[in-house]
Image 1 (cartoon, one colour):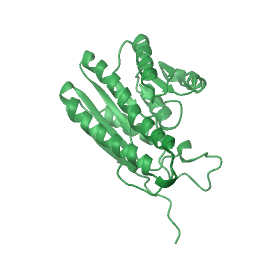
Image 2 (cartoon, rainbow, N blue to C red):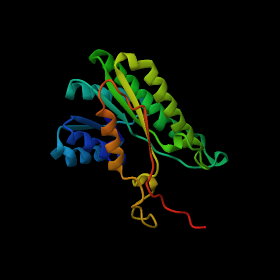
Image 3 (tube, one colour):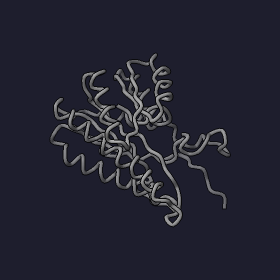
Image 4 (cartoon, one colour):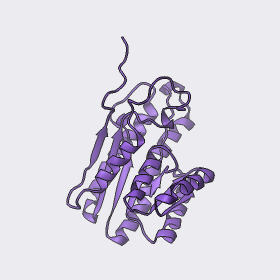
Length: 233
């Protein structure tokens, strides 16, 4: 399962896993976007999708139940769905704060809880959380986003400690600047974006984590552009 799998990093991860031979289920908030993504990915392998807002406990449960019916079980969960609202604290509304926390932190909890229940019946599984370097590097205007990603990192490590002896491996990946719509509309973005991390690079990191021998777990990965854009002085 890949949450937020209709575009950007999530879409790249879903496609990478399909190429590895995995059956993949994706979700997104828009039924139309989910249907389009599934249709476009079908030549790569067995893929299904459902509209689900991971900030809603009931919708998360329904998504997992649908996947149970379609695939008969779950081995891997990739918590990817996320977004950022960037404001200084004094300018941020409670609604904007909750949107960051609900999607970037509560959503992974809701999904992980459902996955762990299923892993217990199957004898194990794998959870990969897509975090950010903002989970260890605060920046002005990023208070809510920083808080959500710092929290996701801590949640990931604690969950790993809780369930490592249940044959559940938990990893988290912290990319820096990735060339997706998260950085703004590419058509309106000024300058060359070729220096950024590509979504496919993050997908490659996910494949690396999942491909490790069972005796070994990569607990976290930090990813940075090799040659970031230089600031003019």
